[in-house]
Image (tube, rainbow, N blue to C red; front, side, top):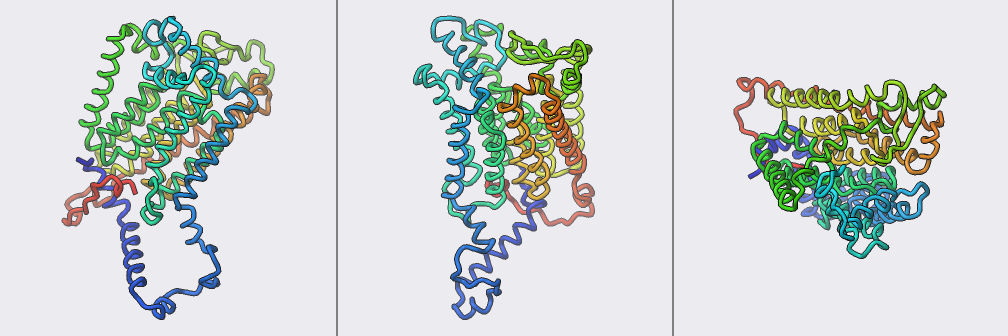
Length: 486
C-alpha cells in the first residue's frame, strides 16, 4: 500500500502543475492530429526558422533530458572524480588505503575483527563494503572501492533520472535534481567517493525516492544505511514524524535493527555491536567542526595554548586550547536538544494537518544539519549527507528549494578547497584558510536556519486546518510512487 499522506503531494502541492501538464499534452495531441496548415497557423513565430536547429529553450531542455546526455554527464563526472581520487594532491584516498584496507587485512590475516572482537568507530555493516573492496586483493583495493561507489551512484542516478525512459516520461524536476547532484559531486571533489559515507549516500537517495509510495522499503534501506554510517538515522526520524504510515516505518526499522544485532551476536560481537556510540563520545573537537572555529582563530592569532594536534587513537586532527574539553562535553547534549526541537516542530506541523510533501524535506534537511552543525567532528565527507534531502526537496517543492540547492553547491565547492588541496594550510592555522573554513561553517548554519524556517512555515492551508469550510470533493488519488514524487 502507498502512504496515504503521499496523495497530498499530487492533490495540493502539484495540482496546478499537473493541470498545466495535462493541458500541454492535450494541446500536443490536438496539434499532432491537425493538418500542416493548422499547425503553421497555431505555432507562434519565435524568431527562428523551424529548420534552424536545436536553438530554442525547449530544444535545449529536451537535450538535457535525453538519456544519452544524462549518462554521458554521469560518466564524465565520475571519471574526473576517480582520477582526482587516484592522483590529486593531499592523498584523498588516505582513509581507504591506510585505514579501511588495514582493518580488512587485519581480519583476513587471522587477526581481530573490528566491531566483533574489538570496539569500532563505525556500525558493524560498514565492514561489508570495506571487505568487498578487497575482492581483487590489496593491490587494487582503492580501484575496486571507487568502482563500487560508482556503481552505487549509477543505481541511484538511474532511479532519480528515470533510467532509460523516453524523454517525455522524465519528470522535469527529477532531471533538475539529477543535474544538481552531478554538479554537487563535481564541486565536492574526491571526498565524494573516498569515504565510507559515499556508500550510504546513493542508498539514502534511493530510499528517499521510495518513502512516499513504499515507506516500509524506504525505512528499511535507510536503516541499513544507518548501520553503515549513523547519519541516515536522521532521515528515519523524519519519516517517523512526517509519514502517516509511521507504524510501518517503525516496524521496518526495528526489524532491520533486530536482524543486524542478532547476526552480530551470533558472530560473537554482542559486547561491541554498539561500540560506535561510545567510541565517538570521548573524542575531542575536530578542527573543521563549527564549534572548533573559535580555537582555530585563536591558533591563527597565536594565542598561547591554542593549536592543532593529531589524535592517534581517533586518527584525526583536533584543536587544543582553554575550554575545549568543556565544549566537547557540551556538544552532544546540545545536538540532542536541537534535534528534539526540530522533531517537535515537525510533529506540530503534522498535527496541524500540514502536507507530508511540505514537512518531510525541510524536516529531513534540518535534522541532517543538526548532526553537522552541533557535531564536534567536522569531517569534509559530512557534506555528502546534504545530497539526499536536497534532491528530495527539489523534486517535492521545486523552485522553493533553489536557494538551499545553491547553498549546497557553495558548501561543496568550499569544502573541496579546504580538503584535500589546501588542508596543509589549514593544519598550519593560516588566517586565510581559517577564514575560508569560517565561511563554510557559517553557510552550514545559514542552511540550517533556512530549513528550520521552511519547517516552521510549512503549515497546512487554511482550508485544511478548518475542514468544516473545506470543499467536500475528495482529493484525487496519487498512490503511484512515480506520480507522488514527480
